[in-house]
Every structure is written in C-alpha cells, then in structure tokens.
Length: 308
Image 1 (tube, rainbow, N blue to C red):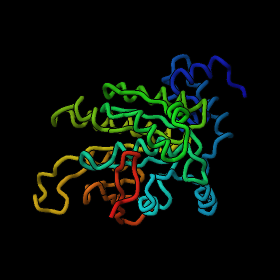
Image 2 (tube, one colour; image 1 turned 30 degrees about the vertical axis):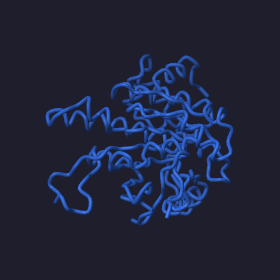
Image 3 (cartoon, rainbow, N blue to C red; image 1 turned 180 degrees about the vertical axis):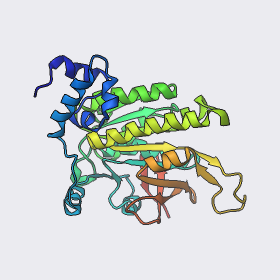
Image 4 (tube, rainbow, N blue to C red; image 1 turned 90 degrees about the vertical axis):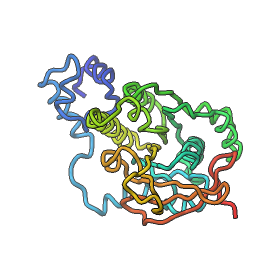
C-alpha cells in the first residue's frame, strides 16, 4: 500500500516483521534503519496509522477485548484457580524463587499445554524457548505431552529452542523469534532466566546502571512481542538473599533486577518450597489477581496438583 518492496525488506531485515511493530516504533527508531530517509519513515508511519488501533477506546470496548483473552493452563487445578484460568497471553508473567521450586518445570509444562485446544486450557499455538542456563530437557517435554494425550513427536516439533550464551546474544535471539513468530501461530515465549546472563556479564556496582539499562531494553522488546503477536511471555528470575532483612523473617530473599523487572512484568509470582514435593505459589504483584497462595507439586510429568 504505497510502500516499496525493497523498503519492506529493509524493515524486516531490521527486525520489523509486522504492521504493529512499525506502528509501535518511534520515528527515531525507524530512521535508524539503513536506507530509510526521515521523509520515507514519516510516509510509512502515515500508512500504518490507518491500519492499527492507536486512538482512545472506551473501557467497555477494552472489557470486550479482554473477554477473548486466552489463558494457558499450568497443569495444576489449584494454580489455575489462583491465576483465574492460567498464564495470560499478551503480557509478561514472571516467576521467581530459589532453586528447586519448579520454575523450569513450569516452563516445560507450559510449552506443552499451549499447544492444546482452547477448550482444554491451551491456545493451539507453538512455543519458543530461550534457555540461558542449559536447563532445557526435551525428554521432559515428551513425558508431559504423554500426560496430556498429545503425540510427543508432534509436541516437540512445535517447540523452537535456542540456547543463549551471553546477554547480547539473548537480545539478538528476540529478533530471530519475531521472524519465526510472524510466519506461524505461536502462543508462548519462554525465557528461562531472563536475568542470569545479565547477572554474570555485568558485575559490581560500577556496571549496575549499564546492566539495568540493557535489561530494560530486553524486557521492552519482550513486552513488544507479547503485544504484537499476542503470545504469553513467561520469564523466570533468580533471587538474592536479602542481607538487610532479619534472618528469621518469613522470607529473606528478593528477586533480582530491581524496579526495572518489577515494572516490566504484568504478573509476578513467587514460588517457594512446601512439604515434600509440594510447592507454594504466591501472587506477588498483579493488576487483577488478589494476593493469595496456591499449592502445586512438581512431578516427573511436569506441574501437577499438590499431594496431601
């Protein structure tokens, strides 16, 4: 529609694969694309303006839109109840907790449940998994797929997996993810430990502000992907011991990444260990969910209901 083919090619090479991505980008960002003059950028902006909802809408319309929101089941009935259906698509959900609380198991379970029919708590889409700590296990996906009655080989075909080796590579992978998602129906994007590489690539107080800036950029891209493709973005975060808290306080750990990650995540869930194989999930921060707890268990076939 009035945009030359080679200009579209230039935009996709720079990581803009959808009309939304162009509409949501600033003129300055688009001017950085090689071979696009400012005049051309403004013209492209004019064209996409008519194609994407950027104006005000009434709260009633917004409510209607939210009614069609798909949620992904976590595999545990209690946990789904706590989350009012499951993990929300179109926004970022962050889980944090110490090791062995089921963060990675939750990621694996969602990779399978997102492929199920909407009536069964899925979203009939594929999944993307960015792994920064080497904890991705395809065998686990096979076991979970069998549990939910899906063909394991098909389920594995539907998960795109990449291992990120440093924080720059991690951001680079998001560009590739956008390219993949623009070609097929995707429902979930997992970043299993969004923060681990930032924690090691930048060290000490001196590099803290630089780290937070880079982390903010990464999370901004994730937010964009969630809105652009309507996928559920599910990220895990590590915790750090809170030295100023009393050691006998109820919980002496806090998530890393500070305010930057707190503002980027729409829903934040805190996981901690319970009795035996049981784990407890607490809604730490959410615009809609009340602060409450739910118990679940980690089994050989992913996340399941708590055992008594």
